[in-house]
Image 1: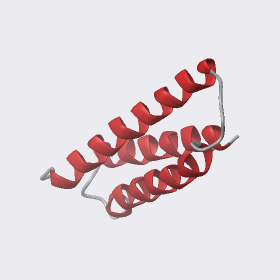
Image 2: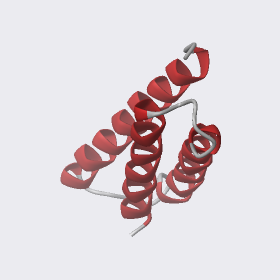
Image 3: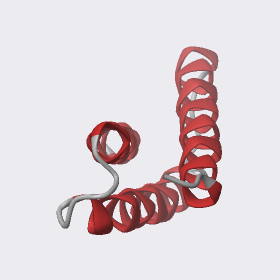
Image 4: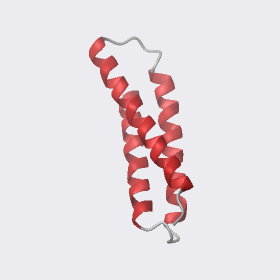
Length: 85
């Protein structure tokens, strides 16, 4: 369940960044990147709760996918933070 929360929060972060990418100059766009960061931070917190739980090899592969997705989304969020526009 905790891993599912991580995935949901990464999806919310991606949605916020996608909306920001379409129109970063609007008033609505100003808080979207921050919302994405908040979702990623919350995802990290849920993963910290999940990670110490023993798991089998199948679930370990799923956990690796979740870690990779969070890492990629963090990179994208950072890119938006440095982007002019």
